[in-house]
Amino acid sequence: MTCAEGNRLIGPWLDDELDVRSVVELEGHIARCPTCGREKNELLALQETARERLPRFDPPPGFEERLLRAVRKTAAPRPRPAHRWLREAGLMAAAACLAVTATVSLQRSADPRDEIVDAHLRSLQAGHLTDVVSSDQHTVKPWFQGKMDFGVPVSDFAAEGFPLVGGRLDMVAGRPVAALVYRRRQHLINVFVGPAANRDQPLRSVSSRGYQVSSWAQGGLQYRLVTDMAAPEADQLVALLRAI
Amino acid sequence: MPASTSLSDFEQALRTHLAAAHHLARWLTRTRADAEDALQEAVLRAFRSFDRLRPTSPRAWLLRIVRNCCYDLRKQSERAAEAMFEEDALPLDTASPALGVPAENPEARLLRMADAQVLEGALRDLAPEYREVFLLREIEGLAYKEIAEVAGVPIGTVMSRLSRARAQLRVPIVASEQKETA
Image 1: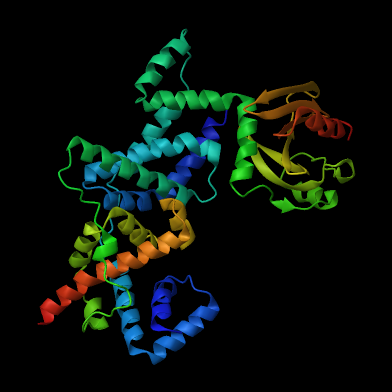
Image 2 (image 1 turned 90 degrees about the vertical axis):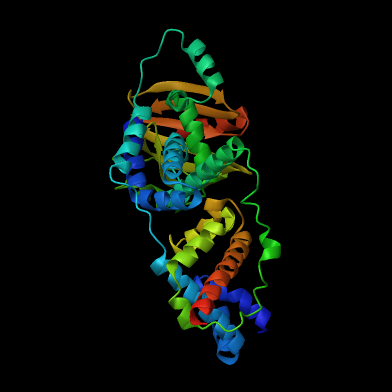
């Protein structure tokens, strides 16, 4: 190891970000090279000084409560004025009023379609698509037991071109739901399953922000399917699920 | 309506990470009042997206919003003051000594005794993007990956900024020690 290489690794070494092999190499080099040894000691001293001596700025007393009060005020539901759109247009033009933006976003997320699309997008973005990864329905189904207070029907439709990818727990409209993930070529499909308000409810499909959302209730369970696939293909999976 | 669920989840996340958020805001703004303003704005912003995003790492997510709000506030006040000089545009690339060049004759034990005030001053003089990585690493103990998330830069950039920050911070401390022992 050259000094230049060693120097580059001292920082990551201090920060516990080096792999074992590099640690061994670096420590070997430092033991032989007084210049790099001094470099290491200085950076270590800087680290210790920073950690032990730099002032900590704690929040002033009451600050936390003040912040939380502001948040709760934002979150409080407010009555809808008669000419809401007019008022919103005016205020949004002002664009400075935090409370109103929050009201708008709360109203938006209250639309179940948006919530479902949001839940779908969240699952794709957060690197949190599945808690249990398995194409085997006999692995996924028991995984949900004890996590949900209802039985989750899980079927793999690989033979029909919709292999099961896995499942996870999610929230839709503030309620815990089981999310089943299926794949069709490069498309992912989230199927959210939760207890239904009515035992049965006919199928309704709508399009929202480029995603198709299909919802229905059967056997006391509410199903919501969301995907960016074209409608005819999405409908195939809906039909398969409804035939379980 | 998930408002109450998300509100209590959000409150919990906020209570857990408020001290770190406040500390960072104090270091990234000029005054205590600025820090509190930035933090309040950050918390409201955070709340608005919390329910939608359900962040996997609430700490990194909250700190990211806090640092963005601090920078927004700085920009505003700089514009308002029609800044005569660009304090934060320190060209560190040219100012920073090459990392491989050892300082003249500093001893580690002297550095350990370094006055915290010297370090604090040096840290305040750093450009904010260098200051923030140093603080997130040394004070908040964040891993490189989390720092990258907070600062919105690749891990390689975190490493080079951290290395430059350390090189910069070491200089005044060593100088101060040499003066004292001279």
